[in-house]
Amino acid sequence: MASQQPRRVLRVAPPGRGGSAREEAAGEGEEAVFATVQAAVEAVPMGNRVRTVIRLAPGTYREPVYVAKTRNLITLAGSSPESTVITWDNTATRIKHAQSSRIIGTGTFGCGTVIVEGEDFIAENVTFENSAPQGSGQAVAVRVTADRCAFYNCRFLGWQDTLYLHYGKQYLRDCYIEGNCDFIFGNSIALLEHCHIHCKSAGYITAHSRKSSSETTGYVFLRCIITGNGDAGYMFLGRPWGPFGRVVFAHTFMDRCIKPAGWHNWDRSENERTACFFEYRCSGPGSRPSNRVSWCRQLLEVEVENFLSHSFIDPDLDRPWLLQMMAIKLPVSA
Image (cartoon, rainbow, N blue to C red; front, side):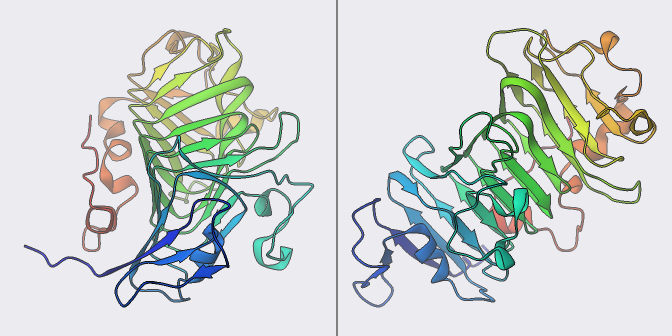
C-alpha cells in the first residue's frame, strides 16, 4: 500500500466568531484556527509542498479570497455547499479588495470573489458566490489561473461571467453553475462531469477564448444537465470569445431553454470557419441536431474518444496529476 501523503490541517472559525486574524493552536500537531478564510490562506507558505486542508465552519463568509501564486496544494473544505458560502460583490467596474490591482489585476480579471493562482488547488462542498445583482456587468465568482485544480460538489453563483476558467487544467465534478451571460469562460482545459448548468435568463453558457488551432485548450461537459427558468429557446450553448473557441457537450441533457440553433458566432461570420463547437449523443428537448447552425458538428464515435477520456486534462501518462493527487477515478470513455 502506498504511504499516505503528509498534510497539514487549518480551521476557519464560524463567520463573526473569530477573535483575531489567528487564534492560538492548542498544541503541536493540532489545528490552527483562523478568523477569516484569507487569514488561513496566508498562513500557507509561499512555495508550499505539503497538502494543506483549510476546513471551513458552516456559515457565510463575506470576504474576497486570493490564493497567491506558489501558495500551492491548498484544499478548501466545507461541510456542504448549502451551509458553507464564500460571497462578495465585486464587479469589473468596482473592485473592493485588500490586495492591490497590481497583484490581482483589474476589470473582469480582478473582480473574482475567489481568485486562485496557486497550483494543485482543490475545493469541496463550498459555494462561491458573486452577489452583485443582475445587470451589474461582469461579476466573477471564481477565477482560476492555475494548473491542476479540482472542484467537487461545489456551487458557483452569479449572473454574468460567473466561472472564469482562465488558464491551466481543471476538473469539476458534481458541481452546480448558474448564470446568464458567458458564465463559464476563459481559455483553460477543463472537464466538467456530472455538473448541473442552470440558465437564469437569456444569454450564453460558454465563451471559450482559444486563439489558434495549435492550442490544446477547450471545455468538455460530460454527462451534465442543463436547466432553465421554464421558458423556451432563450439560451445559446456558447459563442467564441477567441476565434478558435472549443467546447464539447457529450451525453448531456438539455432543457427546452436551449435555442434550436445552439451556437452563436459573436456577430463575426469569420468565426464560423474556426470555432470548434461539438455535441455528442445529447438528449432532452434542447438537443435538436437537425436545427443546429451548419458550422457546429455532431461528433462521430471515432472522433470523440479523446474528449471523453482522462487524457484530455491529464495527458502525461508518466506524471498523472488527477489520479494520484486528487484520489478520484476519472470517467472512462462513454
